[in-house]
Length: 202
Image (tube, rainbow, N blue to C red; front, side):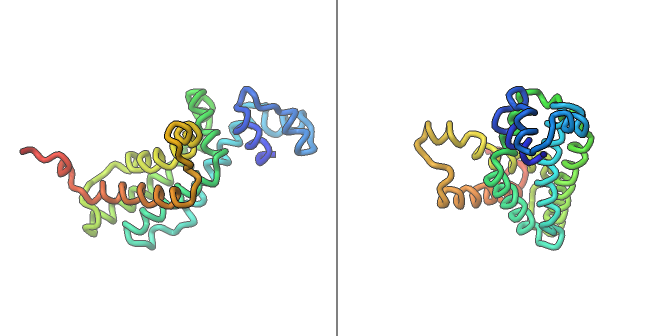
């Protein structure tokens, strides 16, 4: 049910998604879906929770604590990049929830708890990196997470508008590879630059 509901809501949004269509495709009944999920919004929230649980589980499986700080961060960035590239439904769902001002996420302790892990992971990598001298900047892990997410997310969320305006196919393998390296290099370069070194006072 959640797989089909993900397709339905990511394609048609919360307002346009139809529980009847989900019931028909899953050979179940609307009444049963309402019984288990408490209604359309409850099903939609379960879809969001499943989407976040998927990406956070992928990150946990990377075993980043066993890698050197720079390698760990590059591995995390590549995982985020590849996840968003392979899961446009996740990007659409997050975009839809932003239209609703995260009203449904506010009701979910699970989503908040799930997303603590990635910040703790990044914080651990940054702490090890500064302690070992790999990183010179003491960066905020939420800022670093936002920087990574922004680039990876934008490529998917704005693929068609950006591609139309600039006549560039962001799904080309060469472009994908270049962009994956670009965001990793940008983040590492940022962390390897001391605070204030970008704009020295003359």
